[in-house]
Image (cartoon, rainbow over all chains, first blue to last red; front, side, top):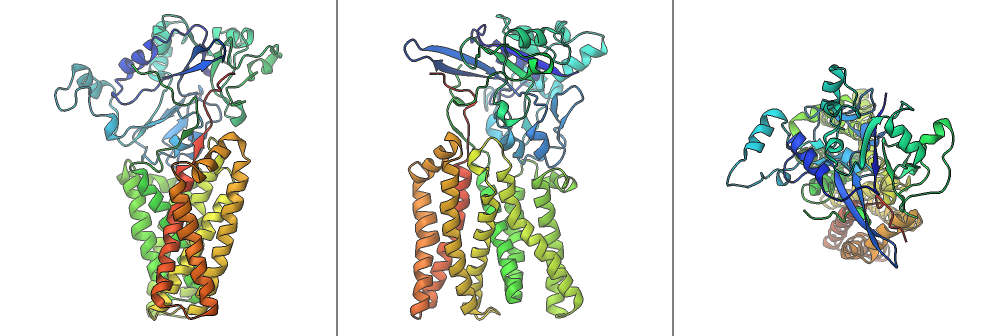
Length: 241
Length: 290
């Protein structure tokens, strides 16, 4: 089992709902966002704004795990790269080592509060009890591992049953995000990767990200997908050309 | 909400140089300088040099690195995983150096010439070499920053540390310490030339390492880091010390000028680490399609 996500960039409407859902789900401090939207112009004559919804790629060969000096960052059996906040010393080597820059060091200036020095909202109070964040440690997207674990314990299927699916995927109104098991050839994510030539970002790093992208313009290739194992191999990259 | 434009262009790393990252910059340089001085002091068998290098690593290197950590009280967790990470290995080098170095200093002071003193000199020397080495390897292994992906980087940092060590050895000799001034000056001269060559080769090789590597080099030479590169590394770190060193061959140079040259070398070493950390840039996350 290896959890993965497919982001269909042609469907993304840049509504930021995924960012909001993640903030609510994990009570994220105001200065930090696990997913991010990267907007860029494509085309010269008729430029269009394209958007990348990016988050931790949950790489299968994660450089962040390799460099972590305490074992705070580790890889679960289902492929999710998780962080044990109680072990993190805040050395930021993982932040530096992530070639996708998807990790955030939670410093004081990123956790000033929604209304600094005035009022602590009920949301913030609830967050301290339900999903506390430790200043001086590193954080990132965890594919809503707590939802997946709770859902699996109830016999639900992540990516199919909403209760076991990441919050950003549930909330996306354009259905640009799809979640599922990459090791299951019949899953929706595997089908999309196979049929729509999904690609990973910077495959040259040999990190094997679990987040794939579909786009009609950027990174698209007419190369037909190869068979079997090669079907999931990157067919194009977001690397500089 | 603001649209994030970041990561579609070259993005400079900030965590290890901006804000509290300044402490890491100092820690990295102090480690190289302290380790280099220890190795040089072993060569001269200078107790003063050994003691000063131990202080530099224990107080400045160890202290600033601890201040940099987000959770400094958990530092002990780092030394539990030397098999996994070069950062952990570096911490182990530092901790062992502090221990071995302290025992060696005690033995050198009270029981000089014993086999135990020699053994601890060797052990502390190995740790000192590890301290000068590991910061370069840490940076070299970062896949996303092509500017750092060079085996030359650890060599450059070692050479820079030993250069600083020879410089401080000159100061010890001028203050009546147990160092031969002529040998220390000769070592400084050679290391200055080697450092200058290594910097040129490193930048040349980095400029050929993908577009972002070239961008990092251009940033150093023409960009925001240019004043630090040209004044700090080139003028203070190489040209002035080299002029003083060459002058020392043909005439008697006043002590004050020699000390000034050493101060310039140290500023140059600091500037070199600063520029290397500051110019480290990531590839764009996504390509701008034409």
